Length: 203
Image (cartoon, rainbow, N blue to C red; front, side, top):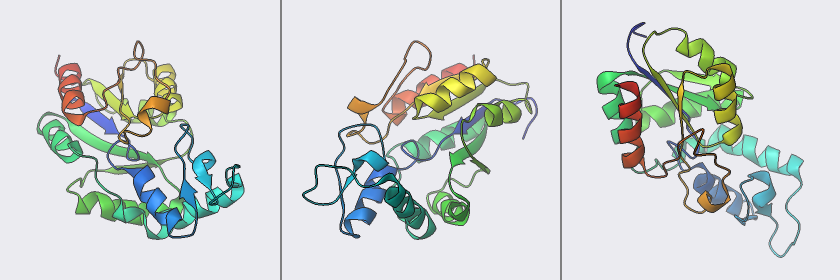
């Protein structure tokens, strides 16, 4: 990292990649179905014909299996690669994701395959402390992009000087996503988000 350059820290799932679509295809292949009626992954998995979502523990098993063998085939969010390329012209770029340990290698391969060969940081839990530690390595402006309000709020608490942006890639999830645009501006199109981030880190 350049200790004086701007920095952009970017989440993966539902930001750079269409995670829900990939996971949906995976569970359909296992005989389940996805009903997107809320912004909650495990509570959206159903057995066909059931009016109760799948047991959370079984959902987590499917999640781990998806990360171990299928996550690297996830579709790239339109506009994401171009935006990160633009950021990289003027700033450092770090990919930060909450992924299980077995997901590191598949996730790394996915990033490289999609032209996103940037440093990868695997986090667990709220992202504020990790973002604060990374941001402390540069005196330049820092921006953080995520889809989840708890992560955005965590960064606001731990590193309030970091500019925060929300993006929800899957249009089916957008109506259900919690947002607070007065604290974390939300852009659900990468072209608009790219312009806003560049304005924040180059001001």
